[in-house]
Image (cartoon, rainbow, N blue to C red; front, side, top):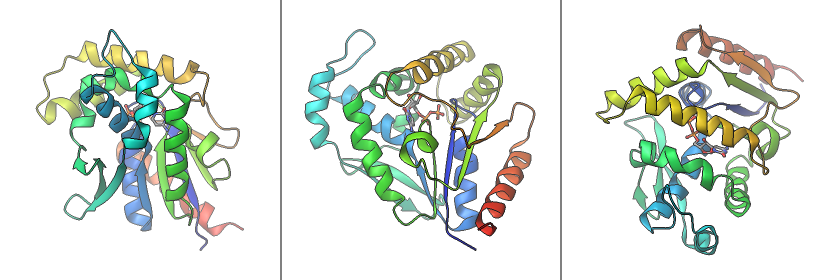
Length: 230
Ligand code: CDP
């Protein structure tokens, strides 16, 4: 079996990270959540008063990029690597609705993208990586052996995210989640630098009516085929 690179892209809350995490575990590959990196940079900007709903000191954030150190540390209890921003575990905080509301603005900045893409490419230098995001198959790993693009209806996606956040105790409404998903879909797919689009050689999966198990089996079979092909 050959070592491959697996790129999973798609719209927000399509279950990409759940599938990618599980796939990496089963294949004994590294899993990288590229969205967590954009979220962590956004959290840094929030903590340093560089961004809010009413302002964005983009130039200052770009100047500060050198001070932002991101790393993933494997948590054996959870079975995946958690993200650290300047040595602080921010895995939970970056999933807040406040970060979700600002992250797509930060992800539009080319200097931010350049820094994060470079680090992402390093993670995949020896293949054996499953990475999910928006531009993994188009920009980060254009030569990935397996590219998957996931989508589902906005309502289904909002319901999944709503369930996830309320389960962990966040006080959010379904409407604000749906609005946020639609807002991010729009910015992510219309931005100038690395917009979310389906790579020519990606396999499209609409998972509106698939269970997680069905979705996983589909992706796992695709990975097996790709690892076994020449
Ligand atoms: O979890 P969810 O699918 O909602 O989003 P995420 O994967 O955590 O990504 C958060 C945001 O980061 C996205 O809405 C994009 O604006 C940005 N992002 C990006 O621009 N490029 C990536 N490769 C990954 C995320």
